[in-house]
Image (cartoon, rainbow, N blue to C red):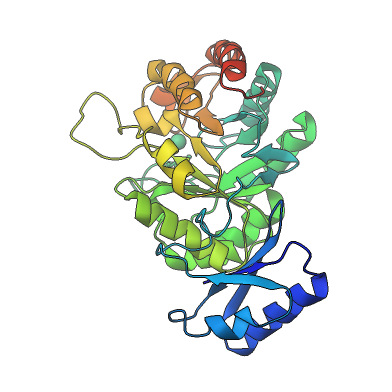
Length: 337
Ligand code: PEP
Ligand code: MN
C-alpha cells in the first residue's frame, strides 16, 4: 500500500503518518517526490487499514500497489531514482562508466589500470577483492588487502571504488573501504546477503543472476530497499542460453523493461555479458542506445596475464576508443558523457 501525501503536507503530518504505520507493526518508507511525498507500507496484508490512514491529516489518498515488488516499482515512485556513488550520480542525464580489472591482483596492477581508465574518462573504478570463482582452485582475490589497494588507487586517481562482497561478513569490510557494494550474479538470491546490504550505508550495485527472470531480479532489489537502503543500482550482465558463441547472452531488452516498471537505475556489463574482448565495445554502444544509465567494463593493461577474466578484459587503448565512441553517441540519446 502507498499513502500519498498532499502537496502542502507538513513534515509533522508526514511524521505522524509514519508513526501510525509503525504503531500497527508495519514498516514505513517515506519517498520524497518532485511534487509530493509518498509513504510506502510494507509488512501489511492487504488494504484493510486504508481508511485509517486516509483520515489522517495531510493524506491525499491511499492506493494499493498491485505488483509483488513494491518499493522498486514506479507505482510507488514515478520519477527516476538517482543514486550517488562517491558523488557520481547514476540514473540522471549522465551516462556513467565503471571500469577496472576483474580482480585486484597487485598494487601496481590496480594502480596502472586505475590510472589508465581515469585517463580514458571513467567515472568509477571497479575491481574484485573477493572473487566468486567457479573453481575453488582459482584465484579467490586478496580479501582485505585488496580493499586497501583499491582505497589507495582511489586516493591516487580520485575515482570512487566499486567492489563485490560475497558474504555477510564481507559487507562489513567492503562498506568500510569502498564507495559501493557490488552483489554478484551468483549471489542475487542470497537473501541474508541482500538483507545485510539493505542495512548498509553505502549504495549497492545488484547484478542479475544468470538465470533470473525480471521479476526475480526486482524482488532481490526489493529485499535491499525493504531494509531501508534505497540506493540500489541494477546491472544486467547476461543470462545463460543455448547460444554458444559467447559466455552469456546479454539481455539488453531487459533495460527498457526495467525502465518501464522500476524507478531504479540500470547499468549493463558487456564484459561478463559476452566473455569476449572484441564484443565489449559493440555491446557497450548498444547498451547506451537501449537506455542503460551506464556500463561496467573490465579493463586490464596485460589481459593475457590477468588472474581472472583476461579473455573478456579490454586493453587501455580499447577503453579509450570506446569512451570516444560513447561520447559521440551520448548526445544523440539526450545524455551527457
Ligand atoms: C564481477 O563483476 O567481477 C563478477 C564476478 O560479475 P558477475 O557477478 O556478474 O559474474
Ligand atoms: Mn570478472
